[in-house]
Length: 222
Image (tube, rainbow, N blue to C red; front, side):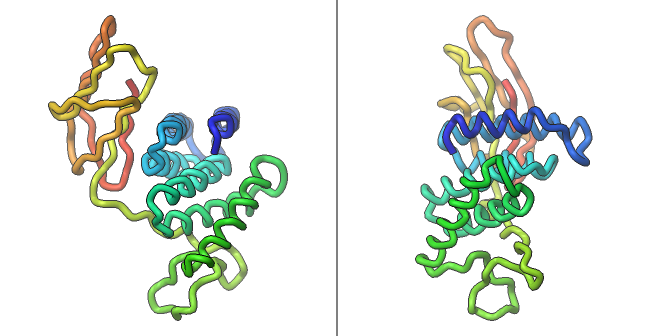
């Protein structure tokens, strides 16, 4: 997904009202989506997926599904973990089930077809075979032809802290006493409370205690 495509998806999300989501959830989803777009642009596709999926949990819009699929596809290119392709495929299918024309239908359809071909070449089923079923693989459809539930995400037991916001000259980010480099800042942390300090010349320091959750992204907006 190019930067322009991220901007389009973000614009659609910001313009649309939340269907079934309250105003607090919608605003939180928007913040997480922006964080995902920033992580995607920085090349941290694992963090982008976490942010997009948490946004989707709060406000499940097609634009977020498409963006999550794109991030999972790019993550596979770095990790070569086929489960990322399986999950991307499920999101593309959900997107195409809901959006019939316009939007990113052509891109999603093309990506879906490419993933199906690639998984076949890798000898990997389109979705994981549930325990107790045969080993003949899975075509990704239920008995009624609908897409199966998305394959569950796997994580390493750590949480991901992301510090993001306008990049200021001379900024300094310290997490639990350890100075971090880059911007945005990404740190994998054990679950629990952690201290974050963000400083920049001419600005009041931001000191915050935040909580890392295993398999989740915790956003500190600086």
